[in-house]
Image 1 (cartoon, rainbow, N blue to C red):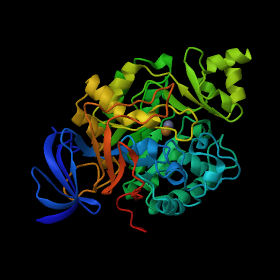
Image 2 (spheres, rainbow, N blue to C red):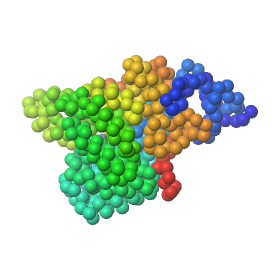
Image 3 (spheres, rainbow, N blue to C red):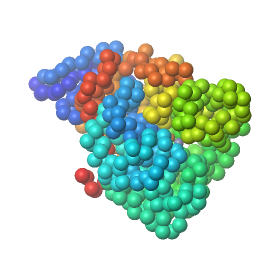
Length: 484
Ligand code: ZN
Ligand code: CU
């Protein structure tokens, strides 16, 4: 009889492929799955009876701002408690590296923490720091366009010059050579909005020969969204890069009901270039407090404020009424600040969530004092609410959107599937019970129904809490030659 470290018996297996679940055993030796099948015979160091429970590949959170959290709070409780075993950081044009700050981080880099959290002038420094911190989850990361701009420009309200672009390209090349997934941008934000399409293409050109990815928080998600999709695709083609549209949504009341039209444009583009998107399962967005998005018809909740920390969790309308000023005036007084915008129609969100090219990404904001509940609830909510309760898609499809599809998109070769030879990133859960419990009113709450989570073969989380073991690795972009 062969030996293994862990034998998980009689699990209902969703292998990530999207196919039907089957009953089987899994043997783990070291970091990897060594056998999958019914009635396995192994002499095991530990046996886990999984009867009645569902086993899936560990979830991949495709859209995070966990860049500094994986170092500052390596237990990563908001994510591991959902069954997430890999986080993709560096989204929306902001990243922890390569960054050389002169003063305060520009908006929205504030989402990644205070100035003191930015200690990685080169991407290589960041990779080293993640490895030293040894977080509970695996980490892969983009380099952010806004971060690169801020390294080289004295003001961010204009296009970069040829010299500045050359300097940004040097930073990006270093990041890519050290394993960055690609480039992200956040052209909707004031500190990147003045960048013309050509500035971004000049950077994405570096992606072509490296099979790297362009992830975009598009120039707009409101009325001009179709033009923004067109621009995203142009930038992807210009750089020969696969495009990931971040948190695809129809934002703003004037834009509600347009998801079918948006997905039609998305599908048309997909027929001629590699393109997919991510989405979070909530009808509200969250970011820094943007004066342009203050609209008295939209409920806005303040998640943090530097000047008035005591108002976190209250609505902008209430705050403005209390101060006897307009919402815009109140928003100005709160700056810098963060907000939740209830500005998405549930029906649009569902349609986008259900699209077969949509991956799940939390977009959780780990440093907010009263975060959007997506930080703690995204994955169990997709499984429990949208799959089991509302039957928006089958459980197998929900699992595929969080495992094999992102692993394929981001080139995470030996992950995202339950398969012999793959890394043992696994989550065992109760499919009848799994559900998010974090709410807007009470957002810091662990989900229910997660039984056990393994990262690289190491039991990291159980229903009783974290085990204290942290086995996450930095995942270099596949093909990175500088395999340090
Ligand atoms: Zn974004
Ligand atoms: Cu984001």
